[in-house]
Length: 160
Image 1 (cartoon, one colour):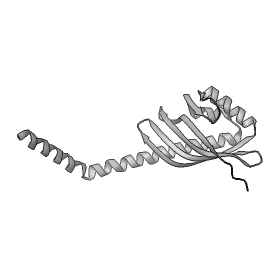
Image 2 (tube, helix red, strand yellow):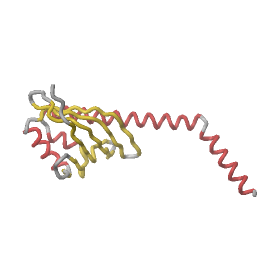
Image 3 (cartoon, helix red, strand yellow):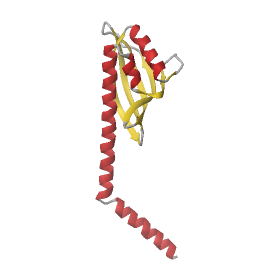
Image 4 (cartoon, helix red, strand yellow):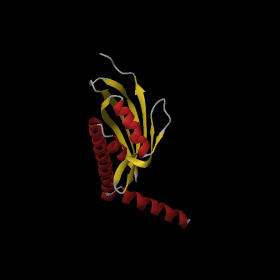
């Protein structure tokens, strides 16, 4: 009988403690962390976009983890930085000259984060040649957020 009362008291005390300002502060800190992760990911996406504009496949590959996987439609997965660099060399030499990303969602926990968004790829004439959705998994290594898993699906290109 005393055990039940002690358990109920412990649970009530915990609920009261969690409902205080410390709990709200913990939630605020978590939200700030989510915002910081999103900002870091968007900064990496900006570097990615700039590297495509410069035709710099090596910089694009450096934004991935050493054992990253890139999943493109109708292709086997591309594994590792060296293979991703070759993939981008091929894409850039085929006429890809610009890419844009629109991040719609970022969630994180610990050293992993996932990002969902849309993308467009343009050729040298500025024409959209591919558009679609993506979902990426980011991994924090030595304080840096790097692409770890990169998955995209294509949508029909809108013609004007």
